[in-house]
Length: 249
Ligand code: AMP
Image (tube, rainbow, N blue to C red; front, side, top):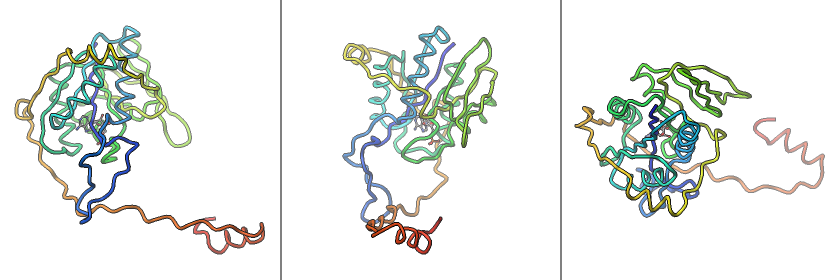
């Protein structure tokens, strides 16, 4: 079985992103970019499934400009076998990402497609679900455990206040949650080896998809600044303030 993993290049999660002065967008020029953290977890899970003998090949795909190849190389250095970059100039919305991933899946024929539960730049949490719908495949979202047995995969899902275990018939789409695993670091020899692994570049037209924005971003803004804390004299004052000033008690 092949596993296809979608990896998105996003602003590194350690970096604080600020809006541009005119509020039209966030300013990401000159910021450190990295693989979306949930996608690193997806790559790790695919590699573990390969190590268990469940899969023979791990293919990573990223949609975006040439710089995405860096992200693909990171996944190759972790141990993925080959990469595909779908070359698009600007960011694509989740539906177009899903349509492009659908076309890549039809070309590569994976038994499992792993995605992050969400990309930390747009926080959409839509691509995996849309991809499953377009393919007509079952989906196991927010996975914190994945176990493949024969023609099925058991996915433990993180849900509010607990977990839910579902069994899906393969092929299936799985999206990763934070507790699924801890991604490995690429070792230097693997980083060197990754430079020689195959990386195919495809354009959307070849895949029969024409990305088309459907949303217009009107404004971005920072969250309101937090008010400074106050030191209370005693418990009576604390209770009084909680009763009279706190929004929710
Ligand atoms: P989203 O629906 O935008 O929150 O993204 C969910 C997941 O879809 C991400 O964690 C990635 O696995 C995948 N994805 C979304 N956009 C892209 C992209 N441009 N390239 C590769 N994978 C993507």
